[in-house]
Length: 296
Image 1 (cartoon, helix red, strand yellow):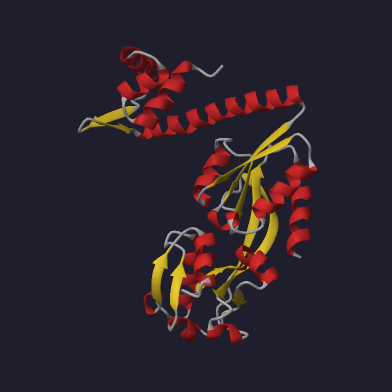
Image 2: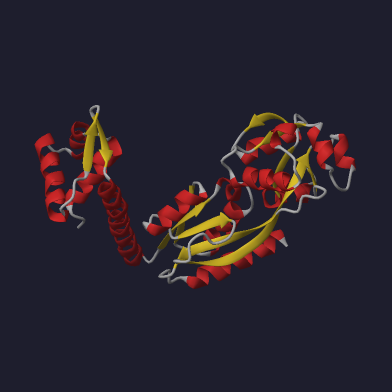
């Protein structure tokens, strides 16, 4: 069983308040204080600084938080794996980005579950950086992310190579063109991902290489939800620049026009990333097979 002191510490970090943490854990506030003092004594550190009645982690406290989360995740994973073994089932937690959420990944995972009796998959959607953090703390088994592998302590398998494209309604006059000119895009109302998204960053970076500023475009709306962006585009309210992989279903049913952008060659990888101690490698091969049967 995980040490109660770690449970207490994680609760205090979550609520940033000893009294609230005590209430949530059904403990007294002195007991909470004692657990924190014991951790500080055992590790010879100060965990929290109190500033203006607000608890803030010290540098050592942040290190402790990282490992406490990992310990808690490992223990939860242990409980899950033992329960799976008893029931002859299997559970996987897979992290995907907001971009991956809008392509065929969810469909691939659903098909895989349907084909494997006793398999349960939980999908967590988060940013690339947070997904790597969750891999390190064993909160997820796999991460499906865009771009090159960020940390060599993990392994990865290439899932697909993707590109950014102009996306518009079939009723938009630009849909008649085989390739879209940057200057034509400047004349359109645009809906883009938020500035913190990798899709947006890649587009901005490519524009800068062409000595073009994103400020030259008529951006009327910024949304992170790609499904919402595509829905608004289908209503001919604006155009956008999105990863081609997020538009596979629209390509199949011809519900949106997807066109390459002249002088903008933005290619990127989508990878399945996993810890070096991940043992079920056959799952990766099966997911790849299903994915490529759908998109190719």
